[in-house]
Length: 112
Length: 116
Image (cartoon, rainbow over all chains, first blue to last red; front, top):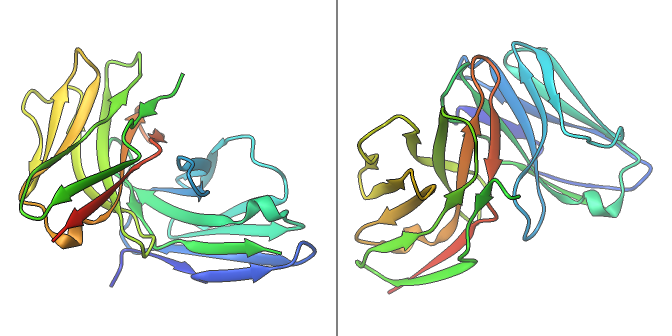
């Protein structure tokens, strides 16, 4: 079983829709991350939660709203997105401290 | 300035040969970590290898080794005996920070194609 799971794997939505991306980690980690990966660009860190508290928000537009109800689950709520928001959204988790991140398979989002 | 620079957008290597993927980084921290990830076409990021800034020995994990040159701020990935399954995007990343919160920075990636 993969340590970090993401659902859905693919999502197509209109600009007026509201949808949510879900991430779940089964590794007992304390920190969770949302990244955006657009074509030909480095991964962009969007949000970081450590011990369920948001510790980083890298100037992400308010149409992206994260939620971390517990240390195992992370959501990204989407509303009124733009076509340029189409990308692969990756979730990751890591233990507290200096360790590497473990990634989920990603959600491929297309905004029409 | 970019935190992580990968200057090779694409690389080709013959199967069974070794290949080096370049990575340079920029940080003023004394304590940091360097990582390499592999991303196949399926999209999942797979952790390959880690090097701590205080580690004196180069990290090795099976066919992967990290050529860490601290003074030059480089952390090149060496893949020995390339296999067809090694064809993928490879990302270099750096971790800064301490305690419960770390910042991670990723390079733009190198696409590796292994030829039979």
